[in-house]
Length: 358
Image (cartoon, rainbow, N blue to C red):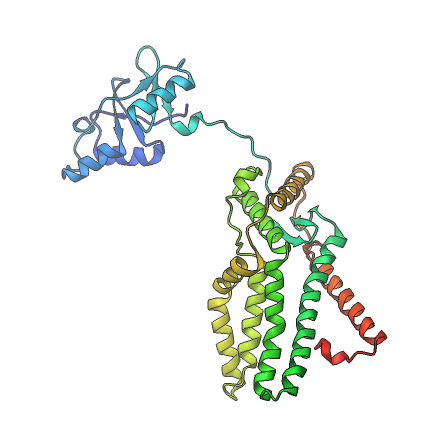
């Protein structure tokens, strides 16, 4: 039961409409001499408007019979009344008919005590699970797992570069025009990277991370049935930033005009307009895919761990350097450097041309 405003039979429709808005339960008890006389609902006000009644007309003209319950009414009895009468709320009255409050169907749902929620959550997908952070707290997989994300991404880009170089040599020997050859070599590494991202389990883990972050930010309980319904596209995903950077650099470096200022200005305008829509499309079709139940469970475990740590520590905001470290980006860069370094070492050991690496 919740408290409620009441209105007298002699009061105006204008006052009734105002109190009904403030009441927030879809119903307003109408009283006479302190005792319940009827009720006003959104439907009855709509009918009054349709009939052209004046704001100064009295409530008595549209008051209708009220569905009531006593203070000892059980939840099951209230549910039966809601189901049989289709009323927006019950008016709870005492034995004398004085209004005590109102009861809505939402009041009958169990009231879960939600744990404290961090104001902002970031994360990253790794081949070994989901990493989450508030900036000051970390949860999920560890430092080495974050490095493997950078290693995976670098390996896909290097593979694309090697395939592009080999294909370029093959096309050159067969007389393929140079401009066509160069165009294919420039596009192929990016294509290989996109296909690899979509094909690897990493994209499913990435989606699980997004779904868990959405659930935390909305205050939802971290259970599979709820998290599974969450969107797999997130507005703060790094994919959007990558798409924005690609748009900005590609348009500003394109030689469609010799006026550098015009190119940069056009690049900035196009990027501001399209970076997020294109980034969301890239997330949906490339960098995420529907997670498996195992991947979803990975994300939920990390989310619960983060919430437990936040509830226990109440950690405040982190400094800039701590946020950078906990973002995982330094780990990704380190993993990429390791893969590039090892690949260069292998090329040197086998006397392979380094220009294949691009």
